[in-house]
Image 1 (cartoon, helix red, strand yellow):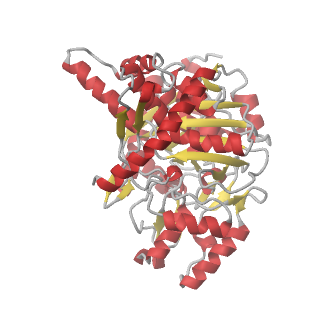
Image 2: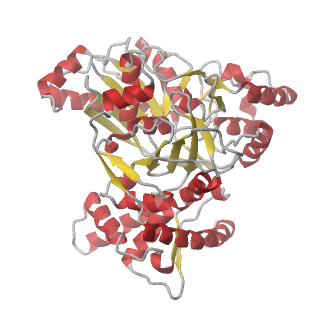
Image 3: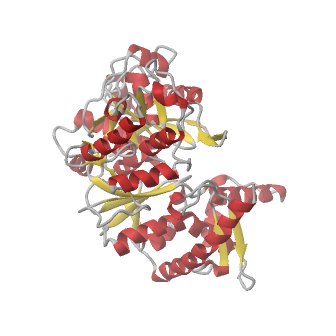
Length: 534
């Protein structure tokens, strides 16, 4: 149903809206929805992680500056489009890239720079905890960072009063509440899906280590409270309103839903929160989420066990590297086009190169690429060196070159997905795609379908992404009326949503398998480059 601008304007004036703000890896983005949960206005702020003293991080001051700039961009959009000052919204939520390490002292001061999901310096801790818990603990999880800091004897540990994620931190600054949604919390410490909170058994095992090492705090006390989707999670305080909107126009009192991770908002935005559904987000990083019917048979270091925002168990395959190196090559071709006097708008450039890739050989014609800009735990890398080489008898064409980089962006994901589908027998009805890889019509879907050996669908709303998913969670808190999250999404959001589905082509599937054999073998060269070139 297409609504008039006057109808949307009245929703904004009356506060029949929801606002989702998501801190992504390259953009902070805000989406304001109307009463039908359709996006009505957007705002954004671009930022990039930094490698400082060997740590991938974002400065705390830039988090706040980016939050304010993103909100200001949204408010300006509302004023320009609807002629209104944004005084209030009906409900609100914050989401962000998951995991990482943000410890605070009792005065609310950040004790060390934010350690993001991209860091791979917690291998020893992750391995020890995985063995202790009989449950996979990835390197990027908050508990791995905490335990590694303990093993390293870092000085700040004695001052810890609160440990949270980026979404939890922003939510705390705006509401004063130290809480976290179940999905984001499951990337801090394992969640028991039966109780909806941190695993008591694993908590006790960690506490025994903590006591033995002599730290005075207790883990339960420093972690955020876990809340399910639909729960109330505080209101915008006067201080929070002034922080978010320094102009003073925005009023306090807006109800907040639990803060979530970008994996959870991706599930919501693609209607992938029910069992046997899955989604894949492909951008700077790439991860797939499959909602399970039953527990896996054994622990796999390549597969993370997290939850939906409602607390259902999810198998997650997370890869640190996806399109960064691919984007760099596209940028290089753009420079060449400019040098030759041709205009190359990004969407046109990507579209032309991606479509050309589909003309290449199914196995990429003997070419190899590895886009590891940073470490990749699934394949055992703590650092990366983006690399390309080819066999002497390779077919070195532009189509094969681009196809090899598209395959490479998903090759590590395929390694993890094969464990789920082939070893664990996990059934998947359909995989929903979202993220930058899917912007060129059907190309990203076709490559993903070949990698996952599954049909891949992209909804017409896929471009809205995580901040829209966060706005939907904020709407669910206000309008759920006792329905499950799955029912709310099916009945109130996606009932009439159209999608495009691409089935796996058998020749593409076989070609990807052949490329993966070369890719696995070529990782020896990648490892040698990491060790030799500094």
